[in-house]
Amino acid sequence: GRPLRGYRLHDQTGSSHLGAVWRATQPGVGREVSVTVVDPHSASSASLLTDFDSMAHALGRLDHPNITGVLDAWTDASGTYVVTRLARGTPLDALHAAGPLNAAVADTVMRQVRAALDHAHGCGVGHGGLTESDIVIDADSNASVTGWGVTATTEAVAADEEAVSSIAARL
Image (cartoon, rainbow, N blue to C red; front, side, top):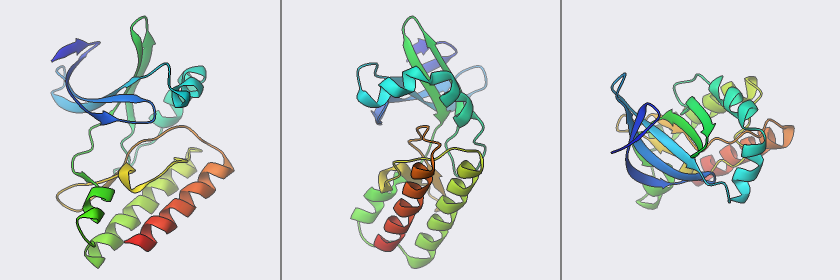
């Protein structure tokens, strides 16, 4: 893989509202992570780049088992990067498309998502754009909320609550 400031990028796993998302390793500690290479030309990235330090610090405070919190973030001459815990599993939208979830699993997942959002809101951070694709379910039916931006407003918190209610109703 391609080296990048203490990480080794392996394969692009997708994209987010910020840019390309890569599976990577952090050789110094032997863990897999997710690295987002921020696209400086995307509209979503423009606001991020303006307030990058405050965003990184706000997301870095999120320490919850159901949140893919920020482990590292920086800007240098080659670009802007955000490193998060690697969410292993399948996005909820893909699971849901394959058929209805078991009621007990759906209940567990939504409880975990609500707990993650309650933690974030308590830290002054709202997701603000939560969809089923931002919820990754692992083999043990544990949820990880991904795709965080920094939208610490009452509107973002209200949008999070509305999104959770909408997602729960579809499950």
